[in-house]
Amino acid sequence: MSWTDRLSQCRRRAEAYFRSQRLEDGNALVWRNSPAHDVKRYPGHLLYGTWGGLLGSTLVESSMLSDGLERDRMASGLNRFQSADGFFRIPGIPPGAMNGHDDEYFSFHCTNYALGALDAIGRPPRFPLSFLGPFFDASFTTRWLESRNWGRPWTEGNTVVNLASFFELEARGDKANAHAGLERIADWLEEHQDSRTGFWHSQGVAYLPAMAGAAHLLHVFYSLGRAVPRANQIVDSCLERGYPGIRGACADIDLVDILCHLRSYGHRVRAIDKLLRSYLAELLQIQNEDGGFCDSYVTPLVTYGLVTPRDVSATWTTWFRVATIGMIAVLLVPGESGRWHFRKMPGTGFFHPAPAVGAAQRDGSSVAPAPSAIEEIQLAAIRRTRFLRQHVTWRVRRLAGRAAG
Image 1 (cartoon, one colour):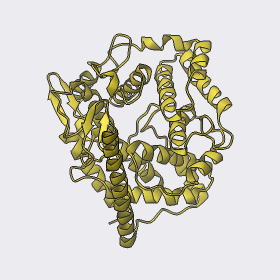
Image 2 (cartoon, one colour):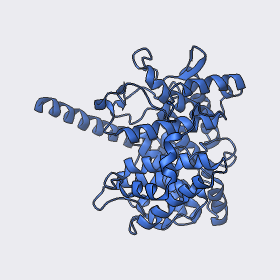
Image 3 (cartoon, helix red, strand yellow):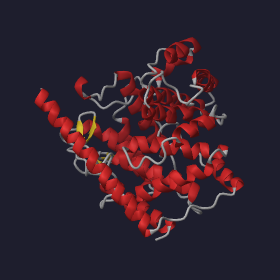
Image 4 (spheres, helix red, strand yellow):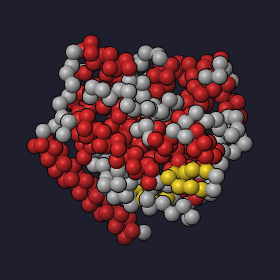
């Protein structure tokens, strides 16, 4: 089967999954976080499911979004979670279920993705973003950036790009101070980038969190149309370990995001294409029968206290996985560039593909061929062995932890 046929099949199945998770909730339309989501026990997690379902449905051009009245009801499903200060939050999350995140991270995170989903359907939030007020002060924003713990670059990369996303949204309304805030973040990042890796992190930080944090921070430069500093070093850092194979949905989309965007710089394009081709082939193999995607396929997914079994599709991870597929498809498969509607605001799922497509044409690289049957079998066999090993390790550690307790 050709890339085009396989991608069409993937999109149809994903659209069916998103459709299956949509619920009527009074005057609102919402999405479950997964087929295992007990909405009576965890009603607040409909926020997560709804922004994931909306952004995923937008990505694959679902016909669910064609009705303006239905879009109003979808917006109602999201806006019920917004407070008067402008933040969106899942209510009632106990401190022990915060995944190690503080309230600032949690509030920024939920708000960015809820606003991104509203933006995708052309609907406004219920309240203005009044929490953003202090950040219009240049000295406040600089102190805030300086206070970040760059020993946790994955966490901080998310927090900073969330702030950048709020500035980007406000700047659309011709607010010059919002655009200045976005430029201020980019200036600060350019001054504090690691000259060796091209990432943003303290010394001694492992590759994965450093790479994932950088994937988010780079969106600040993309959204401004500003040249990425040390782009070649970033590409080298990402390619140094070769193709890592499928991991968690967040880690996979972060690596693909960097390489798809920075491919336009013309550095090691063939090596990038080889890695992206492997990702595309393997991602298309792991779609569940219901059309959704799991997160790690190794351990249960815990989302602020809501547990999704490891073999059950989740709505936001399905959007992440399909967005990863879409980014690669736009670059490697002819005819795909107009079929994917990515998130418009900085943050996961945001993608500006046009410069990279032009670079591919100038570079003269050929379209990556679909994998042979033997390659498909090899990818699947290696993945199953890796997943089994990781799952056994996880179970042993879990049992050891219980014994120690």
